[in-house]
Amino acid sequence: MSLQFEIRRNPNPRSDAERETILSNPGFGVHFTDHMSVASWTEADGWHDSAVVPYGPFMLDPAAAVLHYAQEIFEGMKAYRQADGTVALFRPDKNAERFQRSAARLALPQMDTADFISSVEAVVNADRAWVPDQPEQSLYLRPFMFASEAFLGVRPAKFVTYCCFASPAGAYFASGVRPISIWITTKYTRAAPGGTGAAKCGGNYAASLIAQQEAAEHGCDQVMFADGAERAWVEELGGMNVYLVTTDNELVTPELTGSILEGVTRDSILELAPDFGLTPVERRIGIQELTEAVAAGTVTEVFACGTAAVVTPIGTLKNEHGTFSVGSGETGETTAALRAALLDIQYGRTPDPQGWMHRIS
Ligand code: COI
Image (cartoon, rainbow, N blue to C red):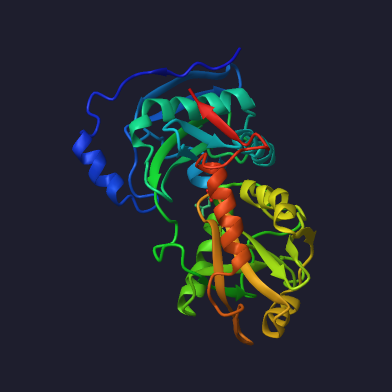
């Protein structure tokens, strides 16, 4: 039976004026809307108690397994105000499927694609007024699931909590859509063969934080990780996939090895590439090969992509061997064109031949 997300209205929602003030400068991930969807899972009853409730804290037992063993997964997706005023999600089925793969890896219960999408739609419907109508802004959605059973044994939890909340969002990087700088770490890795690198689980992000600090110490905005086995191959950034544009008109991204997150934006860009005369290539990319190709000018553009980052140009790569300016260090033509094409689809400004947009009625 499918889950119903009946609304229990927030008795104290933000006033129109408060909401407008927030929407005039939402930042990223710092404001939250008035409602969230929730559901509980037990081994005995499966998913139940689903509803949309006022946004607010959880009551969590100090022994809840997630607090000790990090049995948790999440998704990142966005609702976009369309050119015609309606609201739509971008490829929510892809997020639902990745959530299922992450759940399998973290020994968490499965949630059907239809239930996952219903839970997201229910929050957006409850807080539709929070979907920004300004360019580059959207309503960021954070579905997640965690082990809420109180026990200290190391085994999959028998009680699990699901939630999806919403946060109005502008650009992910404080600098806006300016080219960012990347520190290539060889000290830290985020994933290992057989590990959780392909799952969207909190632990991967926790493990990336010290490397992000290392990047900041080197004056960089973001970190790039190499593979865990040889530390020789490009994997991904701290929460984003990475792409290169070559003088041969190839659009190259690291192949999915099981330790790279299968980004929805990454996948969409692979599909859009031929429209720009680019050959999409998924292959191993050597760290040394990358810096040498950037220095030689055979890689002309590098960019990051993800739901939060959309398409963010990379102007500089840095590691212990030097600093490498990508092209002129400014946003490349292909990066700008792919970014615009993706945003045009997401905001309903252009036809959607792939059927990627999912209208919320
Ligand atoms: C997203 O892009 O949605 C993510 O979950 C990554 C995080 C850096 C915000």
